Length: 137
Image (cartoon, rainbow, N blue to C red; front, side):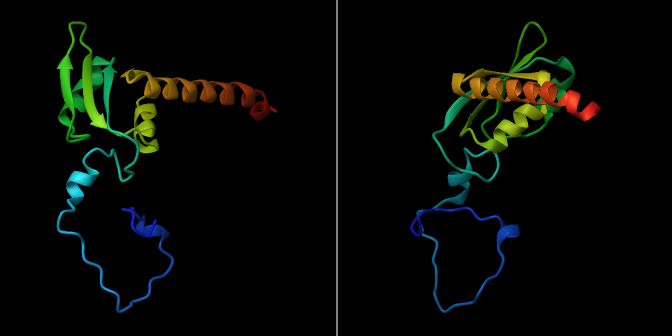
């Protein structure tokens, strides 16, 4: 992994030592290009076309006036909804963002991201249903 491009979270660095070693960023490395497909700081997996339906007309304004990702495009639908298209790699940061909107947005494509959201929603329902009686006692 010493030769790999890695991202470090500053808060996790416990200590640092100054050495005489010198590191030079390769002249052909473009950090903006490298990070372009990421939703946050995690860069992994292949870039996918993600289509999201914004089903709640009240949040279409919020969605369209915010730059969530450089690749985003929007297309208004006849029913008042909006389709957001992105070119990203699916990471836990992106999944958390989707889940944060709850029932107001729906992943249409790709099927593997849609399925992961379904699995997470089902797991959440099971967690809350199974633990509800325990919380009351």
